[in-house]
Image (cartoon, rainbow, N blue to C red; front, side):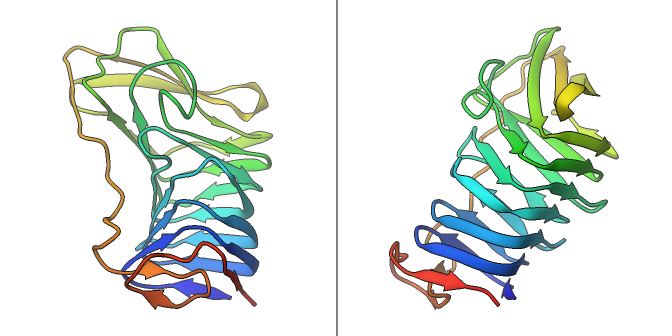
Length: 212
């Protein structure tokens, strides 16, 4: 097993394979091949998947997951479970295409929901009644978010439909502008060479890291 336990880790290129990976740090996934049995984002972990490449693993979120580069799509080749302490932070710029106009998460397997859904409006987006977003899709969804956090002076309804699609209808009575959530700076702490060594220079794009 492999554990990322501190600092800011930039994951760019290479390949990670093996059994389990646990994240307790600020992990930014920019690119690279993933083939794991389990990926757990702990209560102290923040995970920024910034590529729409498939993330092959059973994903459990007990911390914060914020997909994309405002907005973006997190594709999970496996099941997704969010625990009671987990937060899924999704940014909405406008209705339209998932992963282009708003953040979304797609899982080939099932989804089990709990914890918090936090919504952020981008670029001065002001919702109108009837604005709809398909935030999550899977082969089947159970549970529900314990809480949904809307931006100030806005509200909406969340529904779980056929095929595991979780849709949102949102409206507001005032304009809300929020700066996109920024992933940790590449120079804030350290970068991860995919050989597993924490370095301070550019991140390798050739090597591979195997977990056991």
